[in-house]
Image 1 (tube, rainbow, N blue to C red):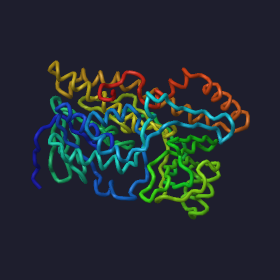
Image 2: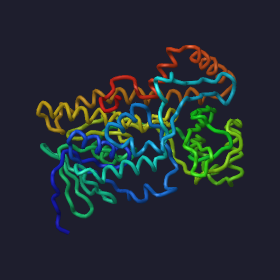
Image 3: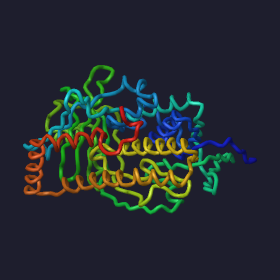
Image 4: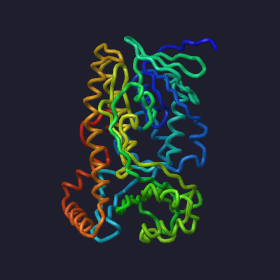
Amino acid sequence: MAQAIDERRDLLILGGGLVGMTLALAAARKGFSSHVVDRADPAELTAEGFDGRASAISTASWNLFKNIGVAEALEPFASPIASIAVTDQGKPGRLDFQPEPHDGSLGRMFANRQLRLALFDAAEKEPLITWYSKANVLDRQRGEHSVSAKLGNGQRLTAQLMIAAEGRGSPTRDEAGLVLAKWNYSHRAIIAGLTHEKPHEQIAWEIFYPAGPFALLPMKDTADGKHASAMVWTVDEKDAAGVLKLGDRAFLAEVEKRMGGIFGKIASNGPRSSYPLGFHHTARITEHRLALIGDAAHGIHPIAGQGLNLGLRDVGALVEVLDDGRLIGLEPGDAQLLARYERWRGLDSFMVALATDGLTRLFGIPGKNASALRRIGMAGVQRAPVLKNWFMDEARGMSGDLPVLLRA
């Protein structure tokens, strides 16, 4: 097939998932055009039952969705997080995070399917976004004045800046030779939807066990009025296959043990799935005419539910840097702009990654003495409003040097 040359755009976004598509929409709001290339079929990604995952969208990330025009479509599917309850194996010494009424919720829960539907629908209507789904990238080039990618159909797309948004296994990042620090936790997250007898009262539960955290996240009631939650159960890698193979009754019995009866009688709501847990962080998040965002740059443990929010902070920062640069005549691939993005996001994402890794290791120390010390520490935080407010600001994403798009 003869090679086709497409129109040149400002951005070439490789990866059209939640973070990549949010970037394209945020950039379009500032007048930047994008090619968005993704291997996946959007019809499969948005099919019922494809992915049982849910995401906690922080206050700052919700501001971003409002500012790019997708919040209205998402609002009917939101389940607010009114408070967070943290316990060590359900023992006394529970830690509660509940913001003041004027601060609003700590975030909102969404099924990933609903996030995709809203983002994909907005992207299809945006003339500044050209979306290439079910597309394979055969070749990437980053030249002195432009970047390009050759697709499997022979088409070559050109732009001024290439963005790697393909997730943890980013081929663009690896091809650029960006050094990656990583380790495997030898754990796997078991994902499942639950319905339950008692209402969750919009409380997100984080119950820590030596084998890993067990999280219950408040979802909207089902169409037939049943109370619903998303479960993320961390198990040892060697036990994961067995847990996934359990019959429904045995599986629910194991889940009920870890829940301690807080929701009463429970039932399954959809299929189970799992994914391996690991940590990775790039030493740098930019190269010549290349920027990394989301999991291509940093992958963290889901212990605090901040993975997607960290990527959305990348989006806000990168768009702000590019927009500020245009005001003084700099094009998107300019080295000065990439250096500013590197300084802005490199340290923040690394500190969040270290914090989540530290929490994972702290709560994974076995033994009665370790558990007692953790509970004493949590009791101390419970009685310290300043500390609790700091943790809540972190959870809401409202701390640090916040990009304008993530502000109210």
